[in-house]
Length: 284
Image (cartoon, rainbow, N blue to C red; front, side, top):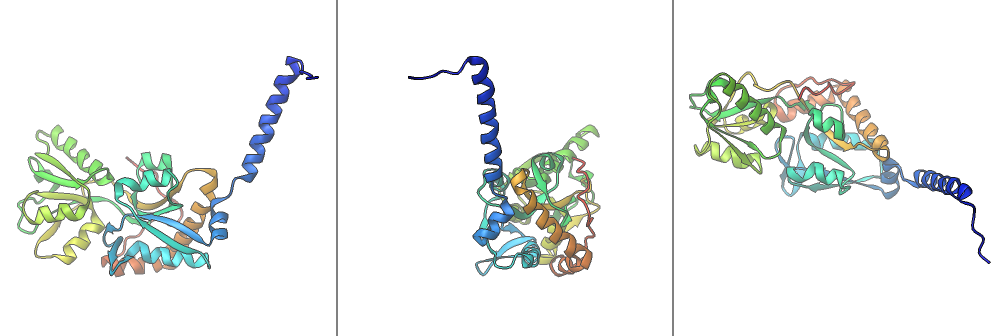
């Protein structure tokens, strides 16, 4: 014979069972850092088309971030790094979808991103400036009014460029056209060929472009965007908290030891002092 519980007892009992199941699931949920240690592997998402931060050379991802990562990972002996080269447009969505454990690529720290992801301590300056041809008549950001200026689709640099456009419009005349590219290399090629008048990109990257082609390009200074920084990123959930803390601890150590500045000089030719204790509140 089937015995039915009175309704006044069945509802509280169901609630208790649900609470027990949720508690058990929480305890069973793996901490991502512990999971990485157990597997002996961490999967890193990278856009390896952003020199000198990260780029491919002789079939290997190299650059400033690669050197930083190698030093940070010394504190996880026995853990192999598997880096996935992903177009920028798939980096943050891929992290959110769990396609990799952590992002080691140049993520501009914006307010929106800081709300959605666990951004790391800063690794470099990300303030945006304009790159023009060496013989360009453009001398200041305001001179870009009426000109065709390029940047990368979905990037913070593109948003900064749109901000410059609005500022110029408020003064009378905005940019002539904003042209979007999948990668900055394409934008630089079109700039060199005269198909665009300028490229909006973060200052350290532009310094690298000028270093490689000093007779072709020059940078418009000062930068036109607000002061911002590049970071790495983790998912903003309880499982990823310890992994995010591990990378922050490693970056803090490299910053305070002076090793981060050494690598900046190696890859950029100059130092970029960045905060070692916290990521400043993003302004945009």
